[in-house]
Length: 217
Length: 409
Image (cartoon, rainbow over all chains, first blue to last red; front, top):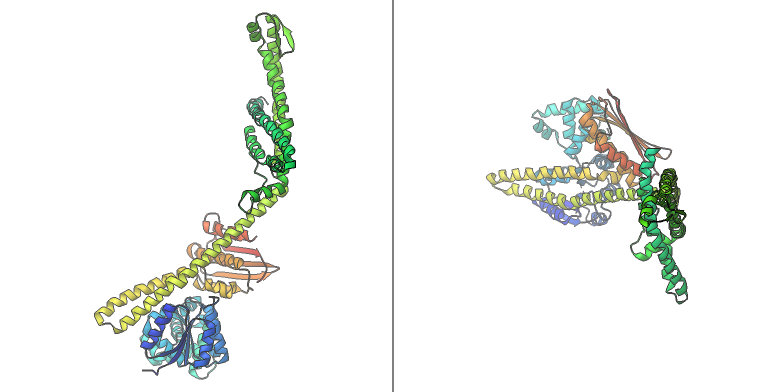
């Protein structure tokens, strides 16, 4: 059982806010503040110093992308603050902007649809809080369809692996998904990093860069 | 010419006769109202009456425009504008300031005091006199001894009477053509005073253009409202339902968990469909990030791989949404009909004009007039003074270009 997280939640729909508090509580996390607009989100983060921020994109007062803007501001002020953004839409632009902050470590961009898959959602929450990167499979799927350089150099299998990396999966999890050995996954990832011309550095950091290459393609 | 006369004469007669029927009572009404109005002006009751006289041209003009139809040509449109506010007072104020009202009033006075007596004179001269001459034998037989034809010529024999008939017939035939000519000239005068002039036509066109733009804007606002309603209502509830089902599954006994799982799948499927539907109505990325990102997003969703080279500033909402939906329709068409393997999407803003081009390597032969989709988009661009052109020779390639003159936001 991962340790309990202190979470600040921003979601303007009361129905969803209550539901999210329930889901997070079910997995042992504590929502220290559940707010309904972007300004309240910022002050809640200031006063509670949470382990993770979960926020909706569309928020009052303008009901456009205030939640995302607030998340970007929070990340700019504190790049180490993990932020998970929930969106009603698959939007590469949102995900890309978010991943540009703090080199994409400790950020997540998920469709609201995923909350219903509570276990996967809880996993994503924990992964982001632990400094991982989570990109919604739907965004990844769209990106895969584009098949443009530099991704054109990747084999279908490598693209598949990169897709799962972008979703924030660990090598073990990818190996189980594709029914191969973990060593095979490691080899694929090595090839991907090579083809994307990413400099050798700490592996998890390069993984994020690979995902970014993906999003910027 | 004979055929023209045969066709025109009955029409001309009908036109002139009905003119008399309108003109004679009109004269009486104008005289009564004018005199009363002038006489009562000192006690102020006369002023409304005089205003009524001033406005009398409006219904007379409308009737006279209708009456032009008797000559077989079209009815001119009314030269008046529609009042912006309801109410009789607003209507009267507007009418009294319009030039057309005073042209109609001038025509009304002309009709009441000059034209209809002239019509009578022409009808009597061209039909009455020859008619009387032609009827001479009959008149003679009725009177017995002698009789005066058309109160002019005294005759007393049937020989003279027959001569009269012959003269009358010739005269009638000779006068039919001038009669038709007179009616035509009369109608031309009416048209000159009662039809809208050039400036009024231009203003009307501007009005139509504005109202079309208003319609499109209203349509756009409604689109937004529906999108927001679905987003804030149905979508949130479904997510909440899916969340509840997800939590229930965690704690349910296995046999129940299976059934919950299938309900959960249903709910998620509906969510996916709803999300796509909402996106189709109005994508949020267009409002938040503008055309560059929205077009890239549309390209992402295209069935055919699209190479995107778009670099655009922000434009007014109406421009962004018209351009976006045009491109999406174009991409959908490429996916459905073109057989293309690749497509290119380019967008630039230069010299105050937004230019977007969608190209594919498909079979070509696209006919923009065949589908309602592109026509509708062309209409929408036309509201913004924009143009849509489709170049698609058989064998390809198809190039769709759109151009909108617009400021940046």
